[in-house]
Image (cartoon, rainbow, N blue to C red):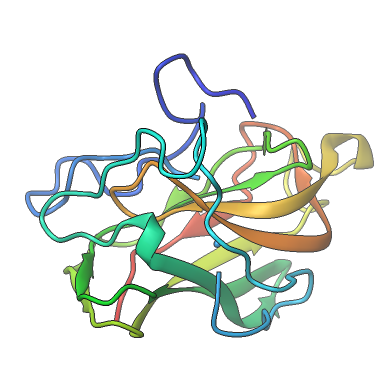
Length: 204
């Protein structure tokens, strides 16, 4: 994936809706860890937060207002089920820190290939932003991710319009450091105009 100079990955959806009076400053969107193995086919064991460029913690600051930083979160997938050419699953963020923190808004989610490049369009946002969720240490919040299978939408009917992907990259709200949820045996639509992912806000 290519990121614009001095900014977040190109094409990512802001993790929080703009214009919302309660929303924090928007941050780039993008896709990850714990709590056990994924419940959705194609998902593998949760992973740790992706390291930032220049080494662990380089240039990374925690969000303001008590919002949960990526370094205190892990992600896993749960409750995956298929319906009419789509898969619905829960993205579960867990507070792995020792203090309470807040989640407010949408995650940024997209597919990435083995080289870490974004494949296809990032997830669009579905529904209202909702209220902030306070996470005590060990507590979790969930967002629902819908994935439309390749071969259904215009612009993604042919195998040549897809590519293998190895992970979902997930930016927690208000964060510019992503988590990573590994995948196995998954292909994604490469066209930037094909809406293959959509995600709701986090709820407790």
